[in-house]
Length: 328
Image (cartoon, rainbow, N blue to C red; front, side):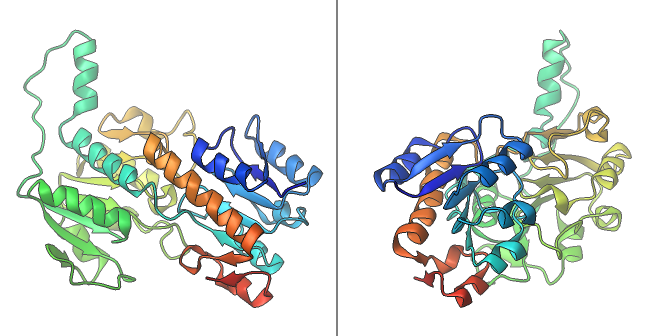
């Protein structure tokens, strides 16, 4: 019997599934995707690996899965996994190699254009048999785009916006290379917010970045500016953002991620057409899903078959001290 792998969703893209099955893995899927179903699956079956998509993996689930040897994220975020618990158990947590970055970047720009040109509201007006050509939009050419966190996705967004004749500024305290051609770097987040007509967030959710955009930061943004978030919902104080848009201080926002998903029925964003939303599907394209599935599967096989991990993708390097895996 080969290694047992649990995918915390109903499907895994064919290329990734094929890699696992060719290596002799038995792959299981959740039927409903609920927390209770995931917890029961981990209790009842000795899974060697979990490929984690959106379902939370809290400490109690990790600790009740004694056979677990690796958690492979189906994506680049990892705030849904209890990293401390995994590290105590000697279980490496690995992220995908950014295969969905191009798709996320394209959605970020798409949301920005939709807000700036009022695409969703104009579409709704036409369907309501209204023909209103007086509602003007915003042109990006000649304006400034601020990129917060300049990793692979942030760089891709910058490249697209620069091709649209926008000036690009960036803030990233962890950036290794601040000499990127065509990018001006700011020393502080406040400086970026004050200079930008468009702000796009591409940060992981960490204790340092949680609620990094609250009422004071929103107040520092230019009147009429646009905020885009395709990273993590917890980066923004959503009540403060709703108030900033409702007051007219911001022209709008484009959001693919939220603090609570799905949105509750009384959420203030639902009554604000200036906020364009998508249901956390930045990486939901054919190419991105294939690429992430392959990366997630390779991370599993590296550990289960070779006993090694890619240090670049390892979230909790302290597990190397347990000597259950080696870095490659």
